Image (cartoon, rainbow, N blue to C red):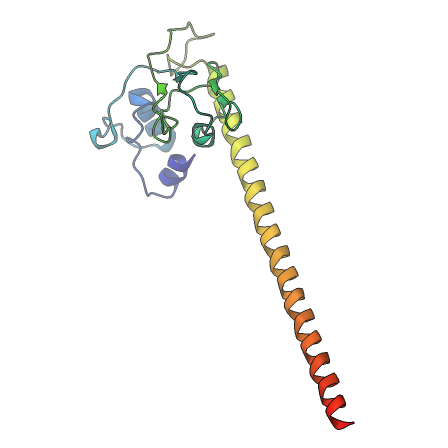
Length: 184
């Protein structure tokens, strides 16, 4: 999603997606009415679709891979073993780097016959639509969490401001009491 936004904002070129390879570059060129071009090697090289696998014996349940997965293809809980939902994994590799115990590997995915002939041989239309849906749901969930954090922060600040105001009033009342005692 970030890459799509960068392309639409002219901050990225259409040839920077190694997982999508030539098919994605040609699709973007067609969609945006631009000339096709080869994949920029600075961003990696195209490889056959991979499927993330977690070595469950080594997994420590840190949840960093779950947080990194853009399509919610990893399930598990804190301090519990995680696993990959194979049908949802796009092989993007974003889960590998955050893993502190290197228990995630990316072997080539088994070749499947698509339901119909279409642009991306490694992904069926159903898989592409599911990945889009999962990404949208994840983004919306993240926005909601961010909004809630922001609201909690505002509420905490209001409580602190109210607390400071209450303390200020108590101090002022104590000063008034002290002065009235001295006056009598």
